Image (cartoon, rainbow over all chains, first blue to last red; front, top):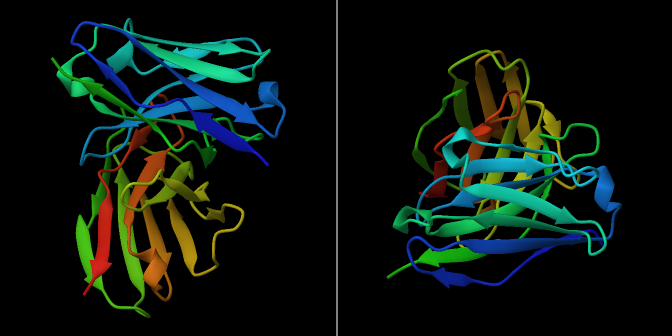
Length: 120
Length: 107
């Protein structure tokens, strides 16, 4: 069945980088855009960016410009998000979500999330 | 960026109640509005897109309406599994933005 399986929890120091993954399966990887959304503890949802798995084109929220890089590996149908210069306030659950086939910005499926903790 | 607001921020209701949540956008977003349900410790679940279209598998007691800047999510008869936090999100313009959430709990 269609799935988005996310990588395991990470603990990083301030200033470090983290690279998390979203492994897709059960559908044609290049047909559906992937988004990343994060949620700090006890807080709401924050959109980070989108990648087109067909060609690697990306669009990031201005908040994360210069610190986030989304990439994809078509051979493993996996999307990666790297966040650099980590700060304490980057502690959050990071979700990947799939854009629907007919409207890339409508989410139709979510991963279970990756917890990233920034701690000294 | 388009700012999304929701009201109320929380509400208490009983099983069988009709529940309505309002979402407002700071700019016109046509009908490009989605609703999500999130239970503690789990990922959000997509309920509605394009203001009123139900995602596959979502019970018909959920409905959405609105256009422009004002939208509503209605649960016609609240069920025990519906106690959760609900978020709206505009999918009209980047950056995509979410409302702050409405927590629905048991009265």
